[in-house]
Length: 130
Image (spheres, rainbow, N blue to C red):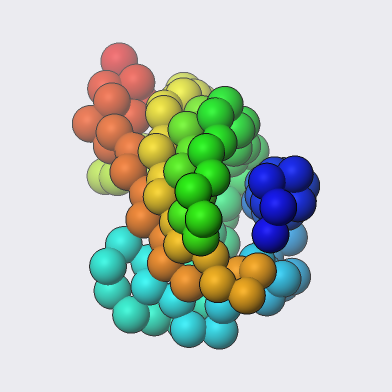
């Protein structure tokens, strides 16, 4: 994919995440995928995404930076939300969080085949328990 096509494709992926439209993830995620170094299926990834949104219905991803290198994509995004259910052992209090996510993914035939994401759970806990 050309850089402009990759950017448009990734923007559609983030829009689907923010709309919580997980049933259409076959456009973005391969049937078999390696999330965070473990072989899995697209359903494994979408189940995590659904679980995250179930506990934080206003979960939002804001893309800040994106880099392409052949079949690799690296991003920096801001994730924000307000838990309405217990999250990371913390009962909901109406407190929101905002954290940085870094992700590196590999794409093949126009879909993610590897997805690795890192975000600061300790910072999220600090915000939720402050």
